[in-house]
Amino acid sequence: MRRMKVRDVMSSPAITVSPETPFTGIVATLLDHDISGVPVVDDQGRLVGVVSEANLLDRQVHGYRRPALSVLSDHLHGRDTIWIRKLGGLTAGELMTRDPDAVGPDEDLATAAQRMLDGAHKRLAVVADGAVVGVVSRHDLLRPFARSDTEIRADLLRLLADPFRIAEDDAIRPTVVAGVVALDGTVRRPSEVAIVEAEVASIPGVVAVDNRLRATEREPMAAPVRRW
Image (tube, rainbow, N blue to C red):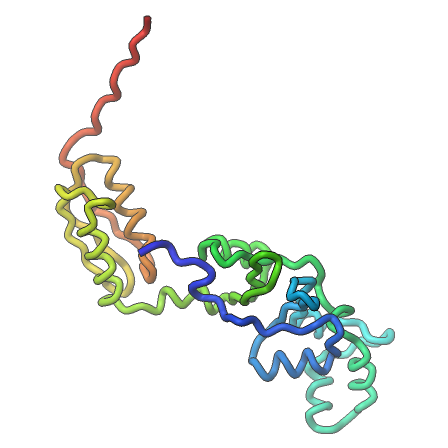
């Protein structure tokens, strides 16, 4: 019932390359694993860079520029091998983006998603104690929303039955449709309305919360401060 962390959805162990991996080795790695980018790590597994499709597509080679996908097509069909030889002389260390963004395994998914959006990344390396322990992609961040209404409702009922999180005298009637939770009923005080909504929104798979809860009492007045 805790908020999901990066470690819950990341791919591990990570597919990586070394700084010495040649262009053709990087291409083979991306194609073999159907991924759009790969972390570059040193001998100790520490993140030193990232090579993405964009790095391969945009690279200037020997004063010429040619789309890498066209080069790959020639390579697959056995044509124009001089381009492959030129590209094959480049390594991940030369092509990579240095000092890339990364996330930790214990960061929540919202943090990872915001970092991806801010940096226009498709995936991020997951780093713990300086070493790459996994990779998280945009696709991975969508996994929590692939839960059924039945699964969400089961978590929701456990939450509402937990006296340490929801007051026992609250009378809440929940429904779940397509990941949207509707909350009807009453809670004791106005401050509990937002608290319950936040707790429900943290359940994996919840897309939105339609909060219709009403408070049965007013918020208690703060005790007056005695002045001496």
